[in-house]
Image (cartoon, rainbow, N blue to C red):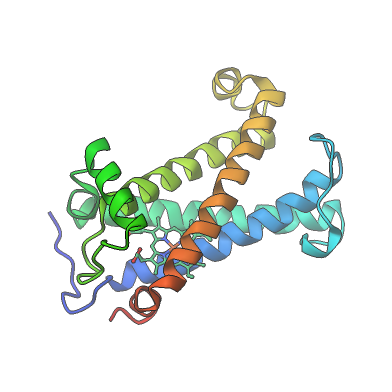
Length: 200
Ligand code: HEM
């Protein structure tokens, strides 16, 4: 098992790099996705044009595809690095429903410790694993929307084109919810942002 090279950092260099590139990709994907969505408004409403990216459908699609490659690259890089450095086990294991409930209670009663930023509490572990799963769902449903003929099995599993479109939308809403909570939590403990930026 390859060891983390930078032992003095709270978060290793590769994680910090991949985290911010991934965050940029996700934000571009959401804003350009709203532009693309506005062409149909299939959920019965439209996003205000001021919060969309790309100015028109074609522009939105170009931003969306460009950021899609960045998301792929960061997700793949994270997957490889987290596997070879043993990060999965170290940061995200163990995780249990009982532990999540206990840490949730401690969060709301102000008892949760942030003394060691290297160690994630059970709520962090569960939420980060959940958002990674959400990214997988976004990528899979996005693949079906992009190339429905080339991915017939995935298309069938996701309920055909319309099913994949709905799943893609719901996964986007979940991601927006995550970002709001994640950013508020990070701002409440600003030293975590410093650690994710500079490593210490
Ligand atoms: C926009 C999409 C974003 C996604 C998908 C995302 C996802 C994640 C994930 C999965 C982790 C855990 C990674 C690991 O330890 O292996 C993490 C950590 C972290 N993120 Fe984000 N993030 C996003 C945006 C942001 C933003 C905008 C901020 C700053 C305000 C931020 C601040 C942090 C911090 C400080 C951590 C360190 C862990 C902690 O102390 O809780 N993230 N993020």
